[in-house]
Length: 496
Ligand code: ADP
Image (cartoon, rainbow, N blue to C red; front, side, top):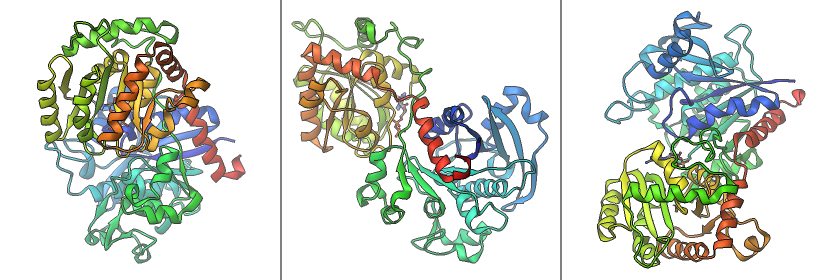
């Protein structure tokens, strides 16, 4: 029997994206559909969402609102219905909260909207109303909330009247670092009953915690890799919520993300100088030469190949271990490696990278900015990618690298630990290794991983095997859609 799921998110491709959450929320409906799950996505009516609806089918104008609120947490709103691909999309059109210039969470100067609590509480309130049957003919078996912006749906379902109390729920954490903390003064304006102000309700250290409230209320908590699901039980990763996570026991699961294999396919990718498949790895060389030219990298006089070409494609932040990368650049160049880096972020890290590029002209080159097509060319042309993250809920760049024959060199954390098989002796002998893992994100850990990678690179047969094994690994949404469907089915056994 078909399971009907309401997915509550603050972003979803192709309508609105600031990070990996949008990829997951956008891909899930199609990923679970073959497994008997009909997923409806609920999004806020930001201008870009309403414009997308209007462009897609003139739907915003034509659609009769499914429901209207005279007061959705104090503001008039209506619920619009449209299609996102083959799947139902619901949009909370509440101009007072969402019709404004800027991003989903911040203004044009990147300052968070002061009323973000109100905006995403309203999204949650709308979701709970829908789950509670506010819209005739629209019923759901499971509500699935994403991150702190979707989390209040589950708090309203739990505490508010007529809000789908009996419906099981899933709360997915895409990054524990963002939790939606607000002052206690907002509590009366959330229009929750007094009992919601409790340690197992929305109260968190004297204020209101949106993600915390969702984690308390959810039937099951998921995060985006099994290792991250284990790590967030520890204070170093739980960011204050580790106790709650531990208390939820086996209700906390890890389901690794997939990648869009239409967008990231080296055999058809239009951004590449030369398309290739696992059987045509020699064709990668044209991409390597093109990348060298694009970054102005040189080959040494006695070095026919130029040595291994490493890339980094990343936010330049502490989370991503970019300070440690800076410390290891001289070591990498000293061993005959070269580095092409694409990223943006902290100014101190950017300055350090500029200094490294100046020290090693022709061996280290950087591009500061966000460039989607260049990120594809980097993955197709480089020999290896460095991902020295201190924590990484799932990580996408190592998954793209695997698909593109670019060997991932990763810290053993979160989704990096779950997606890359270290080239230790046993894995190499068994023919299953796909990359290099290292344990500690500091100079000695990353430097020795770079040394090990360069040694592997000079063993041509082993290197080829790493590339081929990586390209054969399946991290498509097709495979993880089944895992989400199994979870929903576990929550609704009568539909199993
Ligand atoms: P996070 O979401 O924590 O930044 P992920 O690895 O999960 O890290 O996802 C990052 C995504 O952003 C990947 O798709 C990566 O290719 C892309 N990306 C990061 N920095 C850049 C950049 N400067 N230019 C192009 N793409 C980038």
